[in-house]
Length: 350
Ligand SMILES: Nc1ncnc2c1ncn2[C@@H]1O[C@H](COP(=O)(O)OP(=O)(O)O)[C@@H](O)[C@H]1O
Ligand SMILES: [Mg+2]
Image (cartoon, rainbow, N blue to C red):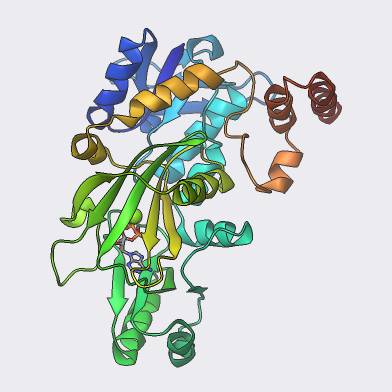
């Protein structure tokens, strides 16, 4: 396969490059910030994709040059996911994830709304732009209250309020600073959580993270947390897989928390670009699982990220031919259903 990894950080993804080349694939990195999307004024099929060079004119990349795109989009996910959508929907590359899943995962409010709507348990949450009801919010959620920005990662914009007084000033602070935040119930887990790499219908690897600073509740490795490899229960594995699929991701790092007193599991967020420290911590390289997954499911022309999606993006996808073509691909075992979806795709093209 011709694999392209869409990322601004080739160094961070060198272990993916290693795996892909060892397994006999052509591999290249594409920096999304160095691309040009040419949207043609003609009907479907004439859009073009270019890569800019430092010392040369943009070079055209043809559909035949890329079979599979593996996104590793970091902080520039908004722009990066637009490039990913173009590569998948306009150029016809295959991606294991639905490109829109990256938009969902980059936004904690979107993610929690979607998870709750498909019955995946999340901590009690309030999303509002109206800061004047702090007392009411605190009564609903109970102290301490977790405060998070909608977009954020590595625990950098997650805080805790232990009193109504601190909640009052922090909410006002956030609104006045123009930050979009959500307020969340505190899950008492003794400063631990789980990072779970989902690849397709499996959990590739999971680690338990623990905060070592007793004054910090955040377990992120980037905040100094320690990790150790764990085997999750089947139920927790299924929960993480369902969570990732519900936002359109076949490949994701799901954050799971367990209440120490009740054992109840909650999904707190989904990362479309999970960090690679898990490789050294657990000794397992999930890129191996990812490339194997692509080898198994890559099929030129079929839409990625379709398998396992639950009632998502219905309005976008029902109007999209790739959705039906994707279903036809998924249903290839069943000729009647496959034909039905192919003819639905053709109808939409008319
Ligand atoms: N509701 C919560 N209750 C207790 N701790 C939490 C809660 N939400 C997050 N945390 C802690 O904060 C860390 C960061 O939160 P998370 O939502 O994963 O944001 P980020 O994208 O910054 O990693 C988590 O890994 C966990 O340790
Ligand atoms: Mg997290």
